[in-house]
Image (tube, rainbow, N blue to C red; front, side, top):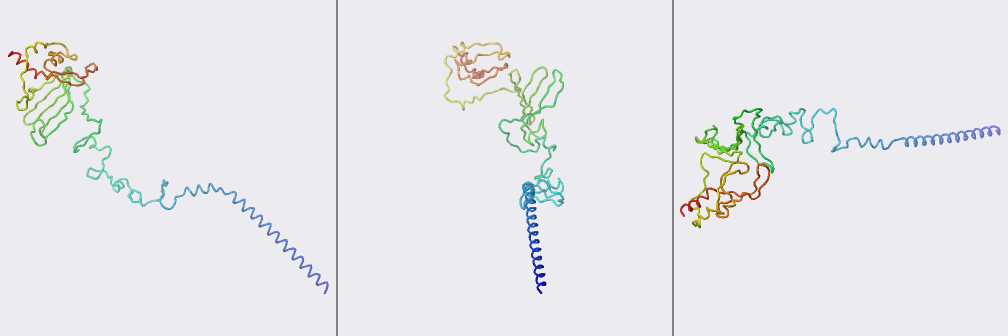
Length: 298
């Protein structure tokens, strides 16, 4: 019986040792697992993961989406899309379809962009101008007349003569090859075709006369010119050149001394050589007639 108790005690002791050994093994394994887990966490590139997450679209509005693959249904205009699968349908959906009707747009090569036909007016921005350009003349013979297009102000349906649409007033530039170049004002309509010509020599011509108003009803404080003969004697008639062009007449400063009412300050005058005369004086020769009449009568 004593022997049996001793064996049982020994068996129990061995079992306790085994349990302790197993417990230590489990503890060692747990420590190893913890060490491995720590190593695994340490090996994770957190920054790389965050970068990948940031690169994904957020729920809601995104301004950084650059492409959508596999999308077959177009986004509506309200969603920021074109509302169509083709360029033509997209322009229609967006309200910019090509065409000639109201609400449509013209293409860059539309022929209407090269003309002002059908336009209803407008205002040029400050500093801008309209230039009328003639056809290109690669060569021209002496005596030929070359003209720019005429700029017309026309009454449609009234007085048609040179233009079937109506009477007009216009102007254009003309070169008489080898002779002169001129600016021409043209009045055409109601069976009349009249031109006023301003030549490059400084002269102007008209089919009629250049006239001044002289009605007594528009004049007041009238006085007869005093000492007319004495005043005429202070004037001298000259021939010569005026800005390189043949000239005959009086000197404005002389006339100003005896009859200042006939002398006018025309402001700045640029000579043909480019030099400038400030406050250039001009004489109204027609208005000297009164002085000459009184001088003859004296």
